[in-house]
Image 1 (tube, helix red, strand yellow):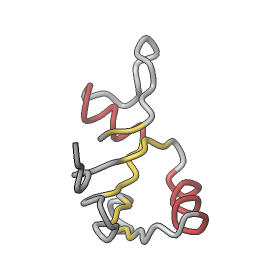
Image 2 (cartoon, rainbow, N blue to C red; image 1 turned 60 degrees about the vertical axis):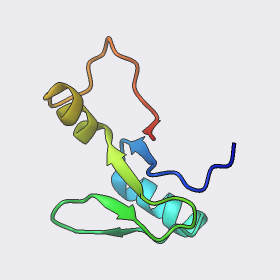
Image 3 (spheres, rainbow, N blue to C red; image 1 turned 45 degrees about the vertical axis):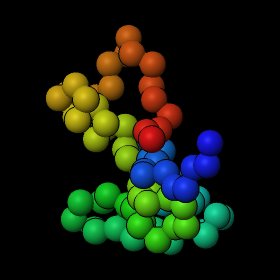
Length: 80
């Protein structure tokens, strides 16, 4: 099997600012974000069409329509 690219990957984070700095400064990921939305992402990585940081709060809202992640559900580490 020859994989040419991954459509998207997003680590799920609890502290956007800390993780934005981690990926951008330590690994050189060319992250950009809109201050109003706080969503941080890039489409500028080779073999990866989209890399974004997704907060656990946004994941809870999207998956469960709740303001926090349910304690009886394991916390996800990322999405592919």
